[in-house]
Image 1 (cartoon, one colour):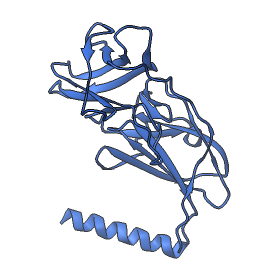
Image 2 (cartoon, rainbow, N blue to C red):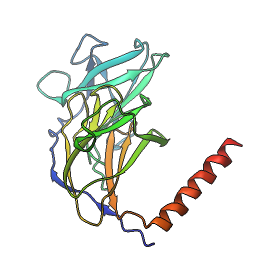
Image 3 (cartoon, one colour):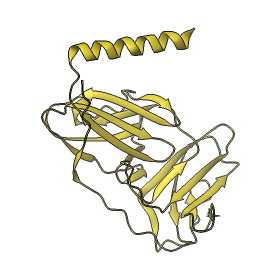
Image 4 (cartoon, rainbow, N blue to C red):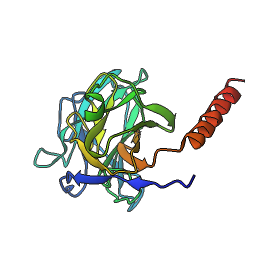
Length: 230
């Protein structure tokens, strides 16, 4: 069967505040919310990507913002977040480049070197249940969930399972906007993606596979699982 991929029709885009010029700092609960607490450095001349390597952070959940050295500008609006590993070491990046790769947000991406591990695609289609744990890891910090939705408008966001720490079309924060999209008739099979490291999400819609094609695909998945177990 010919595969037809249809991008979501996004009915509401949340625009990020325009970044102030560098330098950039990280202020968070781990440095007393000092607006000039930890200086970020550009990964290379003109790269547009700023990075901070943190060490000695207590393991567990923390909140932070990116600032210009004071509180006249800070990003994102609601606090961003990370879950520090047992080592207490991680990296935070602020990517000012603009991308047309289908992942959102398209710019001012907040990246992390650590993945909390369990993600849920929470939305109106599943009762906004943040504890479902329905996204499957596919490698490289990317997680995926696929389901059939009824035509019409829907909302979703990717959340760390059991919490409302989330990633949506407006970045990584504790209060991301709902990702509003429209399912069109004939493209009800919806795939939700989150890149926990890049801090981005995307979705794809396509026709529901014919029964024979679906059975063949399931057989292929089963064979792959058996091969990996050997």
